[in-house]
Structure formats: C-alpha cells, structure tokens
Length: 164
Image (cartoon, rainbow, N blue to C red; front, top):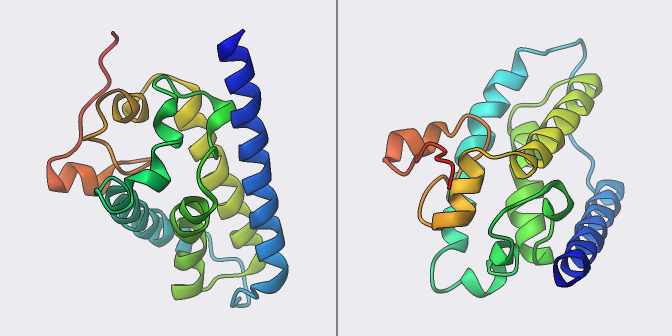
C-alpha cells in the first residue's frame, strides 16, 4: 500500500513538473534556423550529457542535496518517478539540459521537436529499466550523466549495471 501511494505521489509531482515545463515553453522563444538539421542533435547529445552531469553532480553536494534527496527516495527508479524532483532541480537540471543546447546551437523547429521527444523518452526509459541510472539510485556516487554517460566515463564515475 505504501509503495502504491508513494508511486502515485511521485507520478503527480512528475506531472506537475511537466506542466511547469510547458508553461515555461510559452514564455521562452528558442532561436531557430531554416532547413532540417538532424546532425545538430549529435552536438546536443554531447552537450546535454555534460550539462546534466555537471548539474546533477552539483545536486549531490551538501549545499544542494536537500533539493535533490526527494528524487532519491526511490532506490529502484521507475517511469512514474522520472520527473519527481524539486521544481528548482527540474528546471535547472532537466529542462536546462534539453534547452541550453538548442539555444547555443540553434536548429529548425522540427529538429527541436524531435530532440525534446528523444530527450524526454531517454529520461523516462532510464528510470523504467535496470541500467546505469539504477546504479546511481542504488549507490548515489556514480553515473551522474544520462544516455551515453560520456562525461562519467571520462571522469571515472561510471559504474556498469550489476543485478542485485
């Protein structure tokens, strides 16, 4: 019963954060270019990995962990608690990770739509199945990135998934 209730709360908080992102999208006008530019997404993937790793690692410092700890209440992450985070963390960690690459390296609106969809799906999937992010929730001191974990691999904080 407790897990079912916390799952519902996590889902509702995730949904509320998604509403914040939608409201933010009404006031932030992203720069665009003409012509379909899917190659730009490769730059965005690398940049997003760096941005998310740095912001996520910062959230694990004593100064900011009080904002991040509610996300780590779920030791075995699932899709329902993907965006279960403090609103500050969600905007400056999750949303900024997706939006800053688009501001720094503009592309056409269709590439932006694809990017937002892929980035959101990647984040949900990382919480839906056992993998590197599960290890992060279990150990707290590894796998701060997302997707390819490039920055974690470079910094020596990558830990492959091991079934418990």
